[in-house]
Amino acid sequence: MSNVHCMLQVVRSLVTPSNQQQVVSSCQKAMKQSKLLEALCEILMGSGVPADILTETINAVAEVARGDPDNQELLSKVMAPSTPPRPVIVVLLMSMINEKQMLALRCSVLYSFQCYLYRNPAGQQAVVSTLLPSSAADVSNLSTGQLLCTGLFSTDSLANWFSSVALMHTLVDNTSQKEELLRVLLATSAGGHKPITLLEQCTNLLQQESYKLQSKVGLLMLLSMWVAHCPTAVKTLLQTQGTMGYLTAQISGNEHDENEYLVQGLCAFLMGLCIQFNDNSLAGQKRDDICQLIIKRIGQENFCNKLNEVSRHEAYSRACKQPQIRAKSAIELLLDYEYCKLFKGLEALVVKMVTGFDVNGIELTELTLSSEASALVAQYKGIIRGLDTQITSLQETVKQLESKNTEQEKKLTELQSLNHQLTDQNTLLKAQLGARKNNDSTSTNSSTPNNDNNSSPTNHATLEALNAAQFQTNLYYTENLRLQQELENLRKRLQETTATANTANENYRKLQKDQEDLLELLTDQENKIQRYEQQMRAAGLPVEDEEEAENEDNSNSDENIISNPSSSLTNSIENSSPQHAITQNI
Image 1 (cartoon, helix red, strand yellow):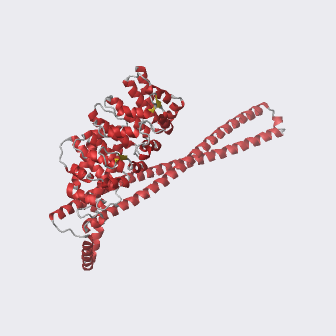
Image 2 (cartoon, one colour):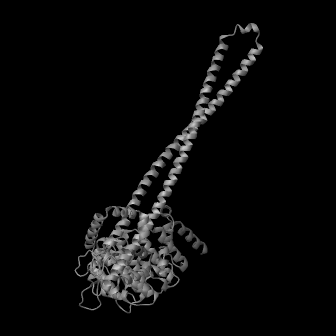
Image 3 (cartoon, helix red, strand yellow):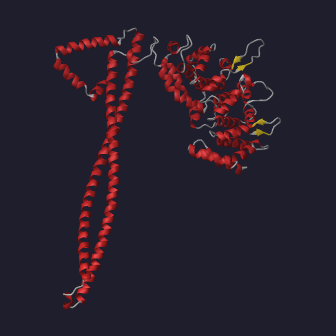
């Protein structure tokens, strides 16, 4: 069994989500073509398999199918050898909601279901369709939707959490299924009452005092994923009776338990999503209405603090690391990987939206600042625009220098190649010239004086060839010297160009750092201005409007310029320095 366990770990190491996507995709295709996935499914459906091997096999099948449409389709068609035969997905979900099963096995089943739905819109639609009224004709056959609802409304808090997370994954990146899930109706136990929607039932369970904390966390994650990027779901949730009152009471509570802080943070995030994705079509529940509720009943700062409690929680750190669910005990199961991704992506937007309204319901912009604050903001923005211009100019200069550098390097390579060729030719010609001189010397020593006057035309031709070769050698030598000089000049120009490019890059980095510092300083200054104005309003002190302050400043500045134009010009020149402005503001 240890060999089988090691083999499964090897398979998982090839397709683990932490690998590069290209590597994982190629390994998944190879495992399907080699029918390894089918073999793993046979082990999965076999009888008498030890629990640890079964758990590892489920994880391996999950990661082989994760994100691969062909493997996900193959997994959906695998049937379990039961009576009657059922899809393997259904059998696995039956184990997940069974509280008698081992925790590790239930976690692996949830992980396999998540991997089956990962980037699988068809699979998500198939699961949601089993919950819709049109698909409820044959109630004798168990479906994935029925099993998820059974676990969602079970008395086992762990089954509630597993079912909530599994149902949440049918909605990840799929707005159409979020709207379809709003059509799901549930029959009530009391006779004569009309069916209620799944969303309404979830909010009813959430408001029950007997509902356990782990179950509440699961439902809050499900509702947050449901309303994110779906204005229709937001509108339906806001119309549900008691929902906003419950969320407000939870966020306003003074709990001292770490897990209660987490629940308050999840409630704050859900309320923030109701603001962010609100289409303002519901009277009394528009964006500014909910923001006013937060300002008057909760407090903007308190709301943001409760929201920050989510990312500070230990469960958030564990869930963010990897998609696979790992837990030593059931109490560690609180947050899910996909929910953490959603929270991380939308937290800043929610905070910005909530803090962007004042106590009078006016959205805070630059127009609501005082004249002094607006002038300061405008000054900072002018500095930043100047830095942006310099950065753009430096970027263009760097591109031009890089282009010139490439051309110079190419030309240098060509000249070096030509230089080598000329050197080789020069060496060859020198060798030929030396050989001919030796031949001429030998023939001269062996000839008699009488033969000197009767030299043949061949000797004259040889002498002329030698002279021509000597002349050509001299030309090549001169050309070689010229090319070497040109090569040296090109090297110097290349060094100068490289030095200029390095200087430009260094200036560019410095300007980027200065711009980041200015942006941080501007943000701090704006926050201080907003805080001071809020304190002044809270204290009942008058806050000067921008238009009145601008008119007063303009009239004062005109009088000062008329009375002392030279002094005004001098002061404007001195204050135009960005460093002086930054120093004064600091």
